[in-house]
Each structure stands twice: as C-alpha cells, then as structure tokens.
Image (cartoon, rainbow, N blue to C red; front, top):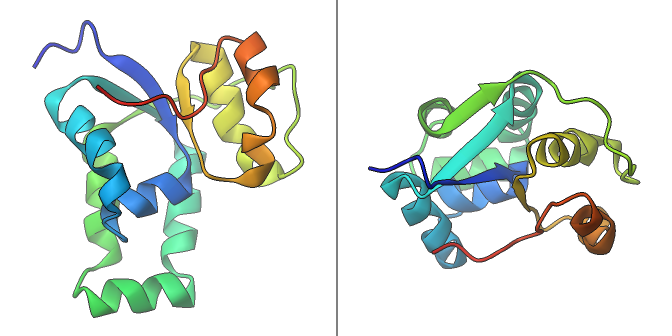
Length: 140
C-alpha cells in the first residue's frame, strides 16, 4: 500500500453512512480507494462525535438493526481508516449549515477533496474550488 501518493479526502457523515451503514453501491469506489491506500481520510474528533450522535438517530438505528449491525462496527471503521487532525481554522467561506462547516474547514486547511451530498455544501462548489478543494471528485 503506497500512501505517499494517496489523495487526501474529507468525508462528511452522510458519506460515512453510505460507506458502512447503507452499503451504497455508489460508494464502492471510495471504499476500495480507502482500503487500497489511494485515499487518506482526514477527520477530527468533532466529526467522530457527530457520527456517534447520528448513529443513534432512530431511522439509522433501525437500518443497522435490520442489517444486524452495531454502531461500534461503524465507529471501528472510522477509527481504522480516519487520520485524526486538530480542528481546522475557519475557512474563508461559511456554510449555511453550521454542522457542515467543520468538514469545509478541514478540507480547505489541507487542500483535500471533500465528499458530501449536503445541498448546503454542494452549492459552495465554486467557492470551494477557489480554495483548492475539489467537491466529490471520482476515486481511482
């Protein structure tokens, strides 16, 4: 596994859910990129805390129960793949959804790709590009 050429990526919580709770087929390339070392997943403790909170939402808990999955399984994936960093300084642009700002800030700080399906993030594509952040680029 050659991580020297890995692409740094920030994954918002919905993308993490797609990877390991919903097992979304569209997330397969990202999952493979992580496991092959082609992706370096950047995250913060606050992102993990958000994931813990979201995994307790009733509709998410029902989905995990139906798949006979525990929240700890998803958190184990996070702990294994995510490289934790300190909270990033505020980016030049502000997201209308304050919960998404931490993902934007971290992506801008490291010039990392940002993966999100959130409408409030998607509408910032051009502003993020000015900061060197690619929004939802394909995985190799």
